[in-house]
Image (cartoon, rainbow, N blue to C red; front, side):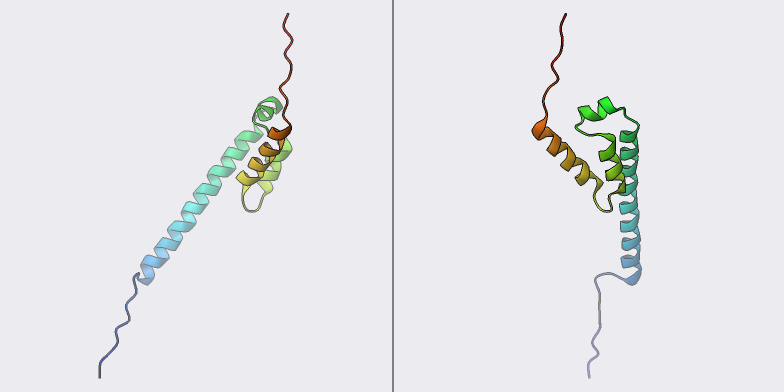
Length: 91
């Protein structure tokens, strides 16, 4: 009678470590996004307008459950369609 050896490509500890490392990477990405959004909140309305955004867009991105960048990209794209340059007055 022959015994069948069961082998796996990863040990339990390797898989657990990889999963914990994945959580750490995900946390680091979310933290960087949050810092970027808070930085946008510190901008005045004129700077946000230059980016095609407003404060409400940034607030909604902060509250977005899945993809804050998608919220901001969508808003910028919507505004880009109707954007008109401001006429400058020269003396």
